[in-house]
Amino acid sequence: MRVTIKGQVTIPQEVREDMGIKPSETEIDFQRDKNGRWYLKKIKPKNASRFRSAHNKVKPTMTTDELMALTRG
Image (cartoon, rainbow, N blue to C red; front, side, top):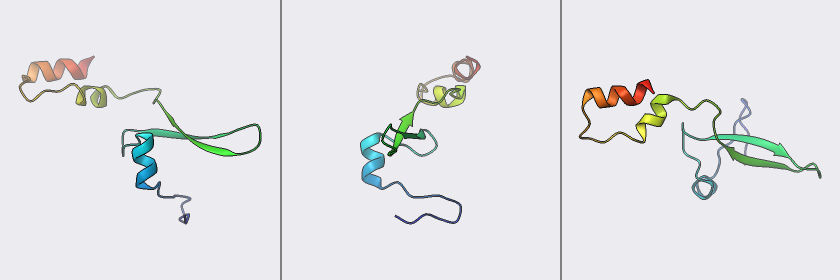
């Protein structure tokens, strides 16, 4: 796997699918164990956007008022 000049690598599709990593939705972290090995770990975002949370709850039949209520928390 090649590292870009910006320090970026592409996570293989099989790994992304197996770990449930989705673009713009998933945060990851690098963690080191006691033997000095590095691991990629999927983490939950600390401050999930209320808009991203609402995105998963929206139904095509909702009214504008119902959509606005979801985004306002």
